Length: 141
Figure (tube, rainbow, N blue to C red):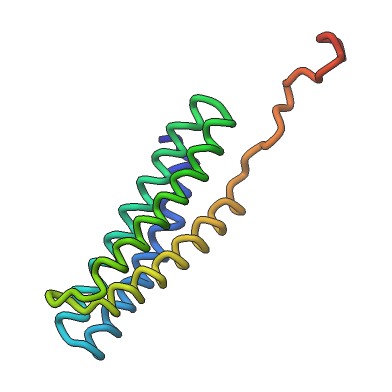
């Protein structure tokens, strides 16, 4: 991973962990230990999925910009589909509180997304290659 990717990961993970801890505390107050367990599982699922997404996009960015965009869109779609499937699968779970899992997954997904957007805005990256060739100019400027 490049330094920008690590900064982006930290910028998204730290707020998500803080929001996740708040959700775990609230779930503990409302649903006890089962609520805390459900919220903690939701926090872990979101952190794992979105971290893997950043790693996939980082790897794809070394291949080409088109591959990076494809990896970003596909990883986001896959993450959302899997989280929805987990929410549906765990709706009748008895080992933990499924509502706490769901609320934690939603809150942590929002926190991750906002943290990632904030991280992107704070990065000082060129999106235009200043040394690049202009098309149609035949190599002369």
